[in-house]
Image 1 (cartoon, rainbow, N blue to C red):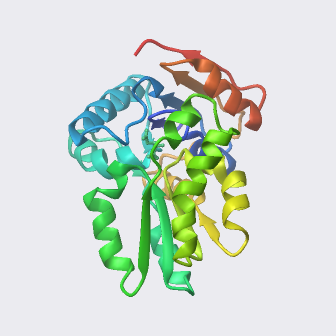
Image 2: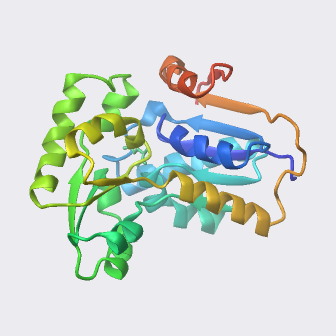
Image 3: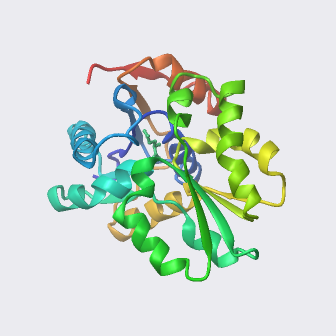
Length: 262
Ligand code: DGL
């Protein structure tokens, strides 16, 4: 079992930002990544649909022997992980917007969060906010359209820049000093976001924390791969695989994406 892969899924290419942190921290673990890009964006779908996609993705990864599943999507994590944990025995790691560290270190007592509609509306986010943001103003913005542009390979475009200005300007007017990226697709936009918010705003995403959490759980469950060999890494996409391939090429030119009908 220890040599079995870690399964990672997202509504598309965004979970690669999580995969990358996991691979950096656990370089000998085998991994299987599934991009359900055909159904992206999840953020505007109903909770029932998000659960249905998440169950399908989980079954896909379990059929390939995954020993643990990382739901590398805030929208699926906040809407479907509770359901998945009740139905499957495998351990699940979920991502959620890093509001707590942002709120704890904010000096202006105002933090921004950019996420999908479904993540911002979720009970999990509501509960986290209730617990950790007493006395803090949280400026929420739905990143409408951002995931679709990323999935269509339109990261460095003026269309993207215009949307980012539209969502971030109102946050700057409220004097945020932390910006929480509540969607795993958004770290691809950090260079553009930095140009808009400047260096007084700290940008926070969950990648490193999720990688540490993955390592802790594997350790606790005695599931860490003890072999120090080069791992296998499979990437699957059920939409145009070139989009995921181009993103992966930035990390490692030897990784290959397989197209699947799913
Ligand atoms: N990467 C997903 C997330 O973290 C994108 C959601 C979507 O498909 O709308 O929420």
